[in-house]
Image (tube, rainbow, N blue to C red; front, top):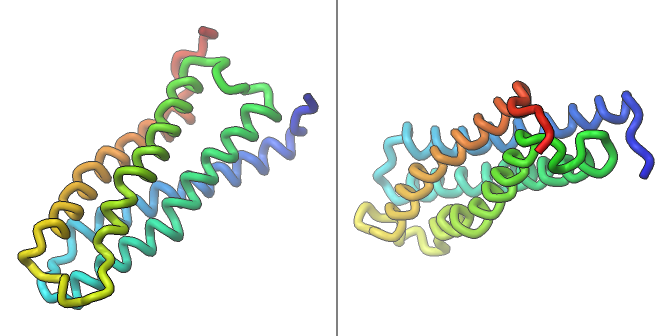
Length: 162
């Protein structure tokens, strides 16, 4: 199969980095919203939940899917391949795991805190605060996983072939 030219690889790298930046900044933004804003009134809880969902929809989801797509392009149309190096294999496993976990576990927590009825945004809504707590805990894990992915992408440890 024909490979990308040097310029094509540089463009791919820029696009991949933009998507990674979107994913990371979106996750960090959600974490900051959930941990630094003191919200108690129903309208405050609603707006924080809406802002969290917007960050998820506009930054995290396209960023994660963009990273996955550009990673596939890297694997097919460059000499890096998919599993040529241990660090690439680890990067693929963690990326797919992070996307699946975000989609099927964390996504429902974020989406589950958007209610049609503003009256449901109360300080005694245990499901709401359980979703917030889970998003904070596992969002922190996701952020560290993303930092690890960024680090191994730059450092490229374990370069020997498997």
